[in-house]
Image 1 (tube, rainbow, N blue to C red):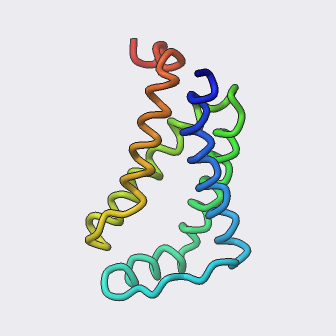
Image 2: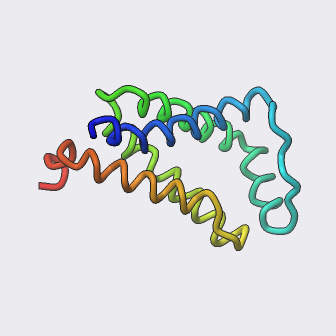
Length: 121
């Protein structure tokens, strides 16, 4: 039963580390965008902000791999997950992987809830 506690964090870690590194290595083709999506991503890419976010994704993903830093990693990755979901809902107008990432993140936080009692209480 102890291994089940690690699964959500490992899933998030793999997603964020792999896609963060793939952004820098250009191993995956960028999907075609148009309209609001294209405008939004053009602005993000031209300012260097997307590069900063991808670095954070890789660093926070690495935090999720190690049990000692997992609770911190789950909290730090949550705003990025919420922003992915908001992009999908408000700009792309179609929820996608953001919903799954949010659910997995909430499950991970719930499974590590004993580590957050000092923050909440």
